[in-house]
Length: 320
Image (spheres, rainbow, N blue to C red):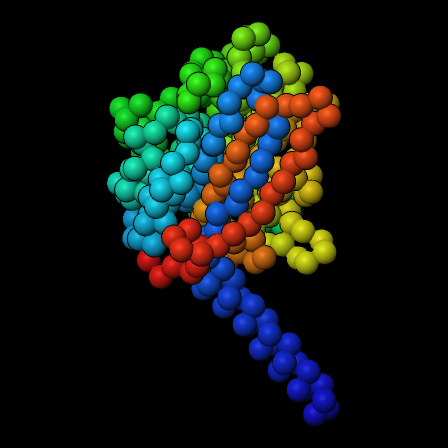
């Protein structure tokens, strides 16, 4: 009985320690990931794209705001924001403080469910259920129109159900985006069709990487799709990976770079935040990703990815 008691106490202590680490340290261990993807036309120069997603910003999250703002020091050619910026009705000023310096650079964005509606408390066990088995309950409407106005006033392009032609750092980019598939707001027919033949990069942007959406972009022969939403699984186990993806995407693609179909590349960001009602990450720190896009070659260029932390882009932040 004494041995059993010690075992239970030890297990309880380990469990409490894991929860404390996940909720208190890892969810503020901001991490920069880097990946190299061969997606450009052969005559295009390299392009550096900063992918940010899922800030889930609360008004007083000061360390997150400082860290995101410091990403401007990377001097990306293009910033892509794949949604879920807000988690509170008064979070627009905080989100703009975080994105502020980056708004002076070329950028495109789409919104996610937590730009439109605030989070609601729910049974944490529901998170582990397949997305098709859960019913979405909308929270308080959020001021996404104010955020959109501020972004577009600074020059960022709203790609929601629109096709745009951009030239960034000498690269001709065709970009098209969707409203959030997680809320079934996507209408691919509004952007359907092959990209222009002279585009050196065709870029699809969506919040939730639902397979039906990825299939549509791949059928239209897009080079790259960027998405968020999954939080990288948010809870990951060694040798197993993400427990869930919160959508119909398979667990193996819950974060990072992969391929979809014969030639399209996919990058899913694990994001920079969590719901305030589920402020836990395990083996999945919050992240932004700097993508270096290179021309395709005849034999292909292997995708490489690594994580790095350290000043000014890594380490645990303060509580706020």
